[in-house]
Amino acid sequence: MNFILVSKPFDYMMAVKKSTTIWLILLLMLMVDSASAWWTGGHVILSKAAVRALPDDVPDFFRSSGFMIAHCSADPDIANNRDVPHLRSAQHPDHYLDLELLKGNNLPDTRYGLINLCHQLKLDPEMVGFLPYEIIESTERLALSFAEYRRYPKNPYIQQKCLVYAGLLGHYSEDVCQPLHVTLHHNGRVNADGEVIAHKGIHYQVDAIIEHVGFTSDQLTEDLQIQALDNLRKGVLAIVQTKHSEVERLYELADQFPSENEADPTLSPEVAKFVKHMAVSSTQFTAQLYLTAWQMSKDITFPGWYGKSFDRSKYDSE
Image (cartoon, rainbow, N blue to C red; front, side, top):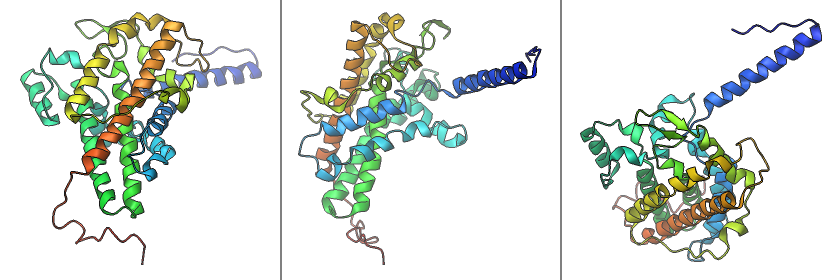
């Protein structure tokens, strides 16, 4: 324990206040999790822009609900809470994929296929992460809800469910567009023993940047043409590879990134260009997944019991 020597009551009060502040800062630093990507404000900015970018094919109730979708995009980070340890443990690996650990092996088709591969490679699946699978599964979950909407378009509960699922999906699709979420070097360069040897803390600097720059939806959607993915799985795995290829460029710029505490940063032209690219690609990819889910929904059929045991065409309470 550190002892504080003071000579006056006022000095003592100020010293205690300073000491308390230091401990609070340290506590907050311990609570920060490198699995988080984009601060909450960043996710809100990106999610609203993604909804803005959608074509008219997507239903109006969805395109007019950007604020609700953006609100729900923060939920996966809220779940990274030590007060809910089982939930935190289960969903924490969904935020990342340390691609280098797979030693060049192709990503399997499913989450459980990856778990089997990890066992073959003598890896802990939690250390590798499941981010692309969470994106694929969340897109299919949204597609199911869209299919329900097609069947019961006046049911507001189904509409609300679509918005919640879209927010959750948006979080993960935005995570994957932060290159440090698809690399072993997620918070600094590491050596063969996993020790950080350079740029420790870079993850926090990158996470903060979207919120601090404060992009508008217009800035992120200008000239964007959104098209659905031809193949969901291939499209998600392609973005993983694309973002992994950008890790090297990010580290080339690492010394130019401002502190995560710099609320109104002045960026070098190179960093400004790279940050804008990350933000636009996040917006585009998220919007693509929303449109993909909507198009997938038209081919989804339901089992015979659907709509019988619970009449989803009714939504007024008795």
